Image (cartoon, rainbow, N blue to C red; front, side, top):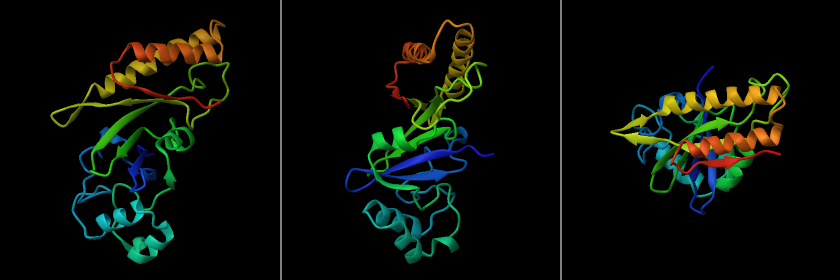
Length: 206
């Protein structure tokens, strides 16, 4: 099943390349594994990842980098070394490529390898309200930055559980006719902002 996440690496031009990781959402495990020496994670240092990262973030084409470094034969890393998308703004990454249901976490890695980890909170109510058959997943949710203490995430499980409880309540309200879709989304956002001092980023698919 996996614990999927998306990693956005800042490029030299200020935009981002987006890379997929199948287990990166598990316990936010990549927060301390992504470094200048191990840009794609992994348990040991290798020669090629820093060079691959440098080439890609400088704007090299993924196909060219793949051939140059023979990546199909390279040892596996936590993050797939070839990006799914290249040269996108952070806003485009969140609104057009981040799947708030599929991806459990979102990481942003700047040029100095400062890593910011976010939990994805999906606004879809198809599993909470019987009258809602489908909900968009891409660009439809909130990103909540994770707080850290002594290298460990603080309250991460509580945050996700609290949001899940909010959705259950909102789903019941929708089924009872107390909210339409727009009203439900507005209520969810308001409750989310009221329960945290962190700078939550919201994306709403139309």
